Figure 1 (tube, one colour):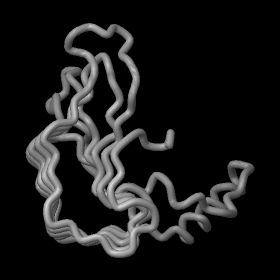
Figure 2: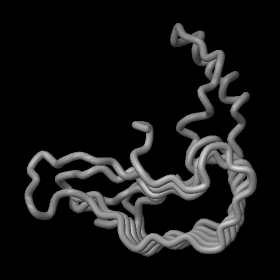
Figure 3: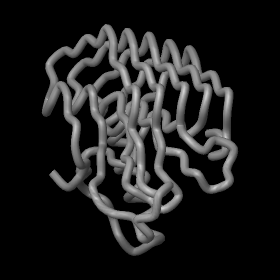
Length: 179
């Protein structure tokens, strides 16, 4: 939706709806050309709603229906881009149906330092989430293990979160697909 190297973004007042059955139909159509077909979804993976990796971002009054991360703050890296850390991000006044949470990460250790800090989620209502509050940490080492490599997740807050009928977990902090 936006260039990867962004700052000062404002997303507001829209709906994101992922049509899982429509994706399956599209997979069947494309599958004929690519010599494979998709017949059964393993949930509608890779259907994230909003994935900011930027600084100074406000996301508000958004309704998301999907089967993957609703909002997933992705790390920025100290690699010469405009945003060297995904930071100063506010997500508020949102409704999520299904979805895999208001998410941080995943944040693996990197030589270019994976960074997310100062993110605030507030007034979020979840209906049937797979996960609601979700922080994806990924253990490991960097190639160099030099000072200035690695990763950071700091000052993340969740306030006024209303979770109705979670499918898996209300809160999950840990490695993502490895569990």
